[in-house]
Amino acid sequence: MQTYKVFADYHTHTYYSHGKGSPRDNVLSAIKRGLDLVAVSEHGPGHLTYGVRGKKLARLNGELASLCREFEGSIDVRRGLELNVTGFGKTDCPADRDAYDVIILGYHKGVAPVNRLALHIWGESLLKIKGDPHRNAEGILAAAESCRADIISHPNLYLKVDIPYMAECCRQMGILLEVNSSRVTLSRDELLAIKRAGCGLIIGSDAHTPERVGDFALASEAVSDAGVWDIVKNARPE
Image (cartoon, rainbow, N blue to C red; front, side, top):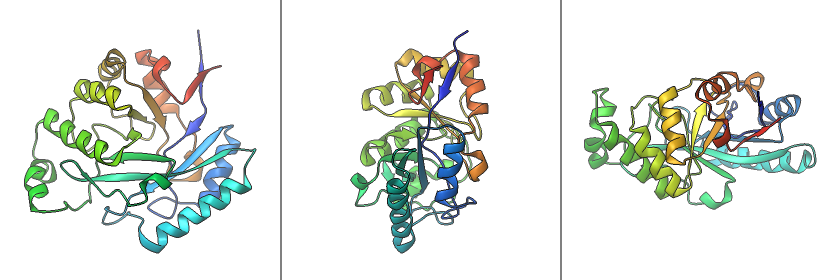
């Protein structure tokens, strides 16, 4: 039976947001795990509690640039950002978006809508009232297009979306859907629907401690159960 190795972790957090440990700790943990690449992708500035912004974000980016130089030849260190959906088609994407190696977009709690129109459109989900999964997917996809996202993190977390529709659109847009190894949010049937749509997957640890960087156990189990390793873009056959 063919086995696969996940060689890159694009979704990790540090004490700059609501994680523990430093960017250096995450890099060292990734090396210990035998990864080829690790990114620190902290929450974007729009999150009221965890958002990294201003001088703090500048310090983080400077530290990542230094680590990239220090560990060149040992591991590829990437500068990432996990942006927040702030309204229908809206994100907290910074003006220097092109300075980042990887842009992740996720729907999170604790993000204030950008205006009253956004509050009206997103009212159902913000008030925890069951909404329309298709409409929710449309809103997130419009946001992903506006910030040119590379990855949509933990789809279905906090907000149910139409996965077959999202997968078809992501295929056309060149966006990967994440199988989150902190909490798998995609069912077996949804993973199979993503494959049928021709969309790619990416596995992320969503680590909030250095020890969890490169911990792909839960996601790997889900991917194996669905038999969709061939569409996981950060895995290779062993």
